[in-house]
Length: 252
Image 1 (cartoon, rainbow, N blue to C red):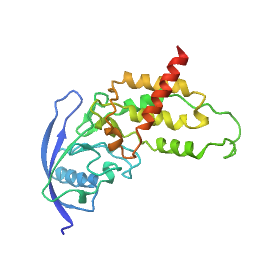
Image 2 (cartoon, rainbow, N blue to C red):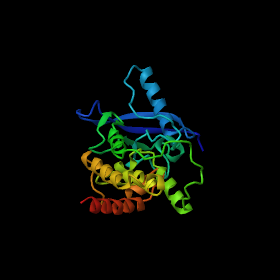
Image 3 (cartoon, helix red, strand yellow):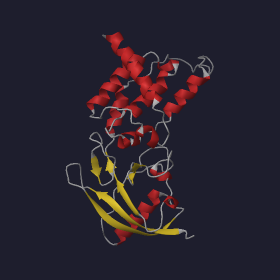
Image 4 (cartoon, one colour):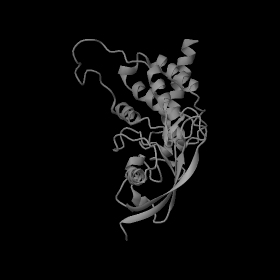
């Protein structure tokens, strides 16, 4: 079996949010099957620049599955054909020699295209900001065991906190809903006593900010959980809905 493959790339190119985009065809030749998907794009861009052509704009940072910047829809799936990983962790051995690969940006009204495959996910930042802060007492650091937390709650909080805010849930959802992202951010604090003081205010403000950003509604399709690189459970959405209802009733 060869360690290199040749691919035909159908890449989305768009000069800006108000420009009309289109798919253009590129050839990726002699790509190592051990390379990551982003390394393959690096090779293609190097060849384009050597020919004096404009490189393909795509987002990346850590390339370790931590930052969530590598927001690509690959063959119709956010982050590509493998599960539980980001695009930077996707390896070229997942593709076949001679295959045609379609690459496009996240598709959502709240994620306007900046250029080519890069989208503006500032909406997520504004939702986080709407959540506010966590009240803490001033003074020395408390003992690690001063606040006893059931193991079940601690694990659930950690699972929700694993969300990296990449936006794959939005890209996968037929309605471009951000419910899984917001629910994960609400839940990981709600499970812990440190987040209890602002609990009701937080969920009301974050859901309001989410709606104002133009994200769609959740219709329980489950695509968000299926495509989440950190495999965040949709049970967090149910938890957030309960908290939102309770907060709405108590504030009315």
